[in-house]
Image (tube, rainbow, N blue to C red):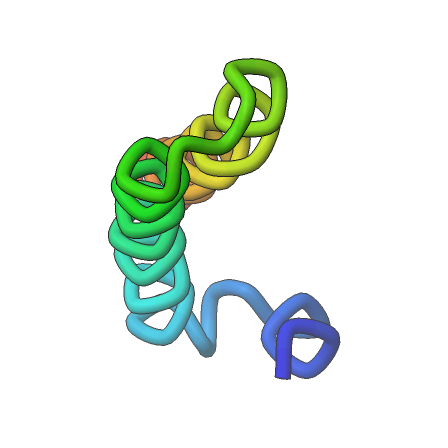
Amino acid sequence: MLFVISTDVRRYRPLVWYVAVMNVIFGFMLLTIDIHAGLPAYWTAFEGPPVVIIGVLVAYFNWRLV
């Protein structure tokens, strides 16, 4: 799906927003699960937060797209 979206970002702009929001939500879910499960700090730091950052970056660049 991401490959199809990337072929025409302007056309699929609403879907890009959806992907960005879902990445942020999924990243926070991963972070919550990792903390609750008692996983090591390095695992928690390198699993959830990068997904959130990617979601925020996708949303930012989609917002900047005119």
